[in-house]
Image 1 (spheres, rainbow, N blue to C red):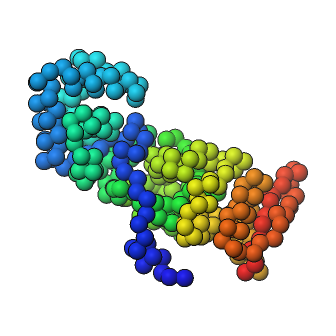
Image 2: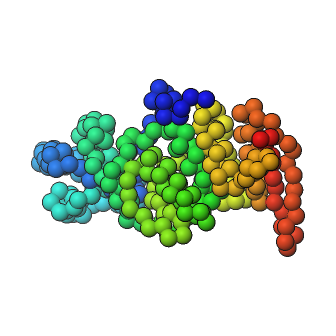
Image 3: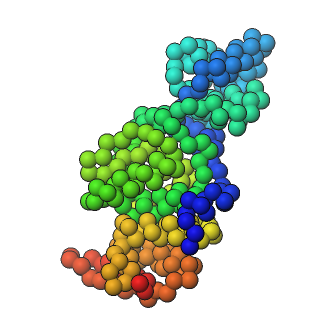
Length: 285
């Protein structure tokens, strides 16, 4: 197999842009020159008529903000003069009205901050590329991930495993600060982006499903996803074995394995304490 980095450089991946993120869940920081130009255009438009203000007030309802003229005037002043970060929904709706190029807006985003967890992504990767590493995060969150207090949490007893996950997620999304004494906390918005792309909205052990879109991805995506499942919920000794408490999940995993033309056995059941069951599937080493 070719080196993954070499392959990645020669493949055109899907891209996810800032306006495709959950717009109510983050705010953006611009470089000063673009921020000045952006708000100068807003004030020029506001001085001409009430049309811009009416449009933004109406659009705000989509995001459960319900702005009025008095509130809008105060907030726009605050965004322009004092605030480092501006709500992404407001930037998106204003840019659309003022006919700013959304890609041009993206090029001038220097940081963004999540509303839940208040994490600042200081060196954002924009747009996000849907690489095999992106796809591997999906399986990591299904296996050893969970959601806690506005953050996604990844747990591994092995500290090297935690660092590995941290390196993967930062290479996909960008740099941010996170404490990881027993695991790694990452911004929940990352999970939202992955969920929306793959149309997966549950990551619990008994409800997780490997999505059809992943099954349709190129081979490297599926290999990376399978490797993530092996790292979290598998072992490799005399054979490569995957474990799950969910028969549904292990059945989906088996289909993923077979889509790669690997030979695997039928699903086996192991009884554990308190009459619980673990389902396993093996690949020949």
